[in-house]
Length: 189
Image (tube, rainbow, N blue to C red; front, side, top):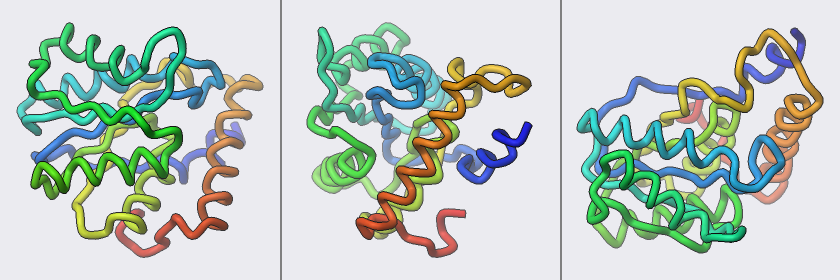
């Protein structure tokens, strides 16, 4: 369908390779438009990357608070999946992608980390990478999107929610471009 053709440029992935840290962005209201969805599959993917030995630490970034603080819920899930609590750092103030990047990269600098695998949803990665390269060009970052999103599921059908999610990402790119948050250099392609 046309929607998936239009959405394809939003996806960015790289072969996962060792890094100093795995940075996981919380789901916020994300793709589904509903609070509390998305973080689970992101944390699960980060735990797999951790178990593969691709990094020795995780930064879980989310300032969202529903009934509970999302970053703390993310940590509890990561620990239940076998990531040691002492390998997890929380960034609990970010309210959007730009703040995820600014605040997580500050934590990386404090810890002396220079490279990261960044975990988010597949269609969010273009904005993540373009913003990261603009805001923090000195830190190496590799996209590590979740391999299969439950929200998008099989791309053989399209729902209104899918259209809204893809439109949200394109509007996010436009807004970030207007704010000067994006780097259109070749590094993020």
